[in-house]
Image 1: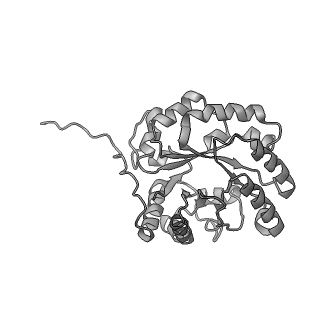
Image 2 (image 1 turned 90 degrees about the vertical axis):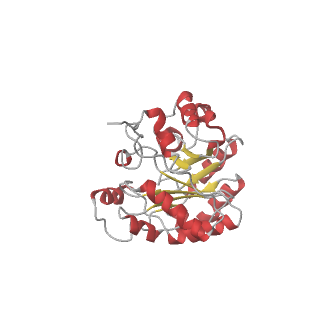
Image 3 (image 1 turned 120 degrees about the vertical axis):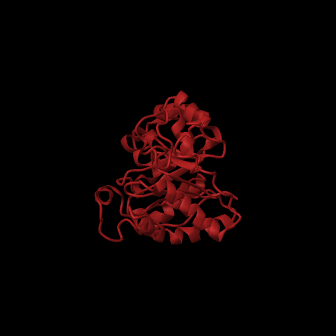
Length: 286
């Protein structure tokens, strides 16, 4: 059985030369990342639809079992709010087609203003999507966490479309005041929503953000270790993304989470061996 873990990006300045080889050409950075983690959040696609050649490069750098959870572009989700965006959607789906099975799920992240009154638009949008992809939805309106009727409504729509509900767990981040500039920035930008742990499909996806202190981050994910272990025993195939405010140690933390789950479920397949962080120099006599 496989547990997929990853980060919010595959290139990050604090990783270069410390965890990943440096320098690396752009066409090799994802390959290096994929030696550490077997999944990644596709956040860049929110800001711009990639070219097909870019998606082809991503596919070349990863094996068929690698998972991209690819975010739909902002014009579709935030500007048009899922209505009248067929042209933008077609262009996006065509662009990412070269990813093939690596496109684990298309990630529909909705703005905080998208509430229960908008669920009809979501239902219509999901109903028009091609069946060749899987879909996962992230909501941030508090009613979906606090109003049981809103929760049931959204779950009914998602279940009918075989779409997953992605929780973004920020509870550890907001448990105590920030202690760094990165944490203060995260406090001003990340959503404060209650914890949700229910999986709707056989492929749950979790986004977890901790603190800049790695040990505090690991302490906060204990309940997720238990939850993910239970999913694996049920035959589900989860993907977990680990964030911290500065993400300096996110690569090592993602692997640490994987190790914590393997300690509970020994049958989980190990991650690949990380690529050395510097190219080996040839031996010389002098």
